Each structure stands twice: as structure tokens, then as C-alpha cells.
Length: 318
Image (cartoon, rainbow, N blue to C red; front, side, top):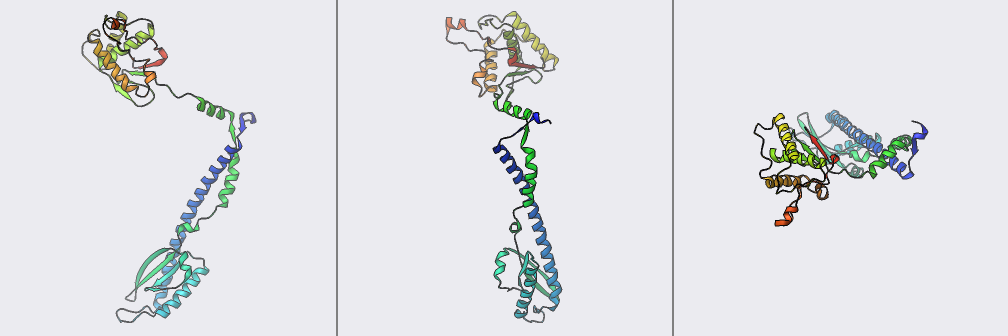
């Protein structure tokens, strides 16, 4: 990519990009630290348990069979010695108690997690309470993440001019507008924006398909409901019905599109009301107008679609 095709982004964008990269790297570092701490604690627990198991033969922990008590002094000395060694090794585990003999050590407060275990040795069950650090305690600031983000951030400081123009165009582009989609294959109508789809019966579907085509071809032709359907509109409706027969949707004879015209238009309007819910203004383009008034006034009525254009519709399976 040549220098003429790239552009330095603004400082706030560069800072935001670096911050996002740094947070992403640091999150990965935290996850790696947590897993590493968890593994280290489990390994340390295994080592301490194995050490106490080996030393238990020399510990005076009492014997239930012989009815001998626990030598508390010996246990205290052992705990002190063992924990001193563990501290020197910077172990994430300390021993809190053996045979319920609890060590008194303020350091244990920094080891909040408890791990209880026991084992049998020489017919005597030995209980152990281990204190461990939390894996979260080992999380720390990652300088590696910081350095890595500083090395990677410059790649996000530049953006191609084409990408910038595209982003600007998308931001300024108007929202998509609904348009009528008539699907003869599925016998449905939809708006092309959302998943609202309505199925129409054969007669209203064919008549409406024909009405849309007729009004596009004859934008100024009136369609008064008290007169017979024009021959051209009737021919288009019959053609649409023939297409439904070809698609296997019906084997019935051709309906009379002049009969019950008000009912057919009512079914079409009901389907459009559902399909264009939330798009009141856009619906007017596709909506056969209702009669306004009675008597002589209704004779001036037309159910034509005067403002519809070819680009307003899509017919699938035509």
C-alpha cells in the first residue's frame, strides 16, 4: 500500500487503538498468570503432602489402637520447621494444622485458601490442613503486554483512504427503505427490511401482483371499484394465476377477479397492514386506497396505486 493510499488517524483514535490492543494483551497475560498460579499451587500441594507422608513415620501423632495421645510439642516443632522451609522456598502453600494441632503464625492470613486432606499411616489416620494462596494473588502488571502493545499499536495508527471513505459513506448512508417483495414461489409478500412475511391466498395474490404491474405501466389510469376490472389488469391477473399453476400451487380453475372485488382488496390491505407495520408512510405507496364517503363521493374513488414505480417492487418467481 503506497503512502498516498494511507492516512494517519487522529490522536484520540490512535490512543483508543493502543488501549484496546494493550487491554487485549494484558487480558491474555492475566489468563496465563492465573493458569500458571493454579498449576503452581497444585504442584506445591502435592509436594507438601508427599513430604508429610514421608515424615509421618517419625512424627509422634499418637495411635488410636494403642490409645496413645498426640505429642503436641513435637507437632508444633515440625510445623514450625516445615513452614520455615516452605517460606524460604517462596512456596504458595503452608501447613496450617496436623491432627488438629494448629500452628500460630500471622503469615497464614495471607494464605486464605483451605485444603483439607488425610492419609493412613501405621494404622493411624493423619489429618492435614493446608493453607494456600489464591491464584488471583499472583496476578501482576505485565510489562510484556505493555511492550507488545507499543510494538503493535503503530500498525493501527494508519488507515487506508479507501477504508476511511467507506466508513464515512456507511455513516452518512441513509437507513435502508422498505420495498414490496412479492414471492410467487412462496405465495408471500414482505418488505425486504425485516423478517415480517405474510402469505396470501391465490386470488388476492394474483390480483395484487397484476395491480402493481398495471399501475406501473399505467400511472394515471383510474380504477373505480364500481366498474369492471380493466381488460389489461384482468389479463395480468390471469397470467399470474397461470404462473401459480406452473409452480404447482393450485389446480383449480381461474377465479373471477371481477367478483367480490371489495373482499379481495380488503384481504390485500390487511396483509399490507401487517407487512408494513412501523412503516406507515412507505406503506401508502403500495396500499390500495379505501373509499372516502358514501354515495356520489365514493364514485370518485380509485383503488389504483398512482405513485408506485418499478424500482419500488421485486417480484420473485414471475
